[in-house]
Length: 286
Ligand code: 13P
Image (cartoon, rainbow, N blue to C red):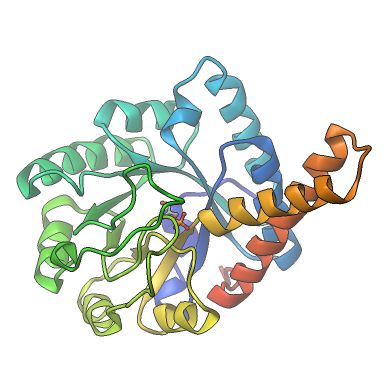
């Protein structure tokens, strides 16, 4: 089954009322965990890489592996560049095989976010690649993933902003701020589900929720019921893998590196499988 665009992966999600999981991978271990989980469930998935994956000296080799693994997968997979900070970085992602890119101008003034997003859309669409952008701002992408974050209500997305931004840029899917945070939560999450529903009711494209980690099963189900179509997810997966490795090391004196990698990968795969199930992801019908 092919490597596809994010638009293709999400094309039945609005009508089907489900979300596709978008999981970040910075290495081979998580890439295998994510693709293996989706293959076992028989559903599409979005494999996300982050800017450092496409920048370093090893980036070409790493991306060649990621793209090949996804192309050879038994389920549809989009390789998506998450939180790209610039037009040039998006171009590099496309050059290295991403079928989808996110330009994140959510911290920029509206006009600047629109201007760069429009340029990215023009370039990406010419290359057959789809684009995500963000309006409003999901807190916690400022490097304090494990310290805990609080959602900033003043940066929540309004329906009017979402519609205007879509009309101004023609993005293929849109990330909105409705109460989730990147990384772990400080205190209890408060999701503005009415806001999400109101955006879903107006916007003709898939709605993306960033900061998927740290919610309860019922929260995810409510997010999906109120219109989330793509849920970005990382922190829970990486914490589960490191916890599994910590436990293994505490219990055994003699271990090989292979033992450690296997246990970390298995823990990540289990978390991905569990969340694919919770998000209600379905196979594409056509
Ligand atoms: P979490 O790490 O909170 O799951 O967020 C991931 C994310 O939104 C990546 O874009």
